[in-house]
Image (tube, rainbow, N blue to C red; front, top):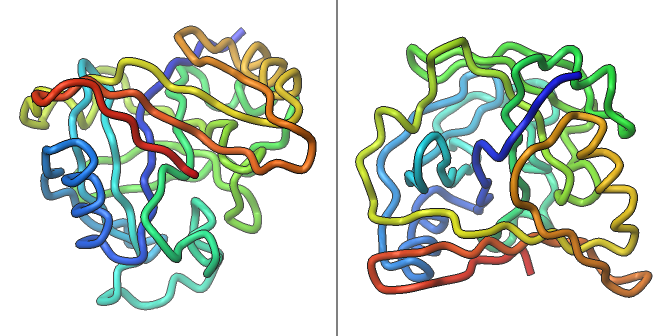
Length: 214
């Protein structure tokens, strides 16, 4: 069975500056420069949240040509991208092909992506949408011994907890078990018809803070 754990949380935003300001206001710490994802027409900024855990702010790159395909993380959905928000999270696995095969939910295709000199494998749904409204993870596999957080400066922040709210929590728990998820994810129910969303509790130099997808 594959094994997986929290790799990073994803804040989508209408622009990179808007997303970075949202994080700075919420946490009191600004994310650092990231880079460009040529295959998706997006770019990012990054904030370390501990050992091999980080926050990613991601937005459409206005200087990049359209990718000719749906962008990831529901970034072609106008309603989803109206304001910065915690949209989803990414689980790191030791065997992405086994995780996709074992998953009780369809995760999409395994694709090779890059940013600068970094390369990795990641799941992308056919329409670029978020699985279970974003509370289920995208799955990623880094090359052995490589992780982008290793090169990030220490922000003084750490991820204290991640909470997933969904009307069918059992569906999410089954999916996480199927990909061998190991780690702390608090899965909570909301009433039928209520939207799914995430909340991340983060320890910062100014004390505990929370960011949310709601």
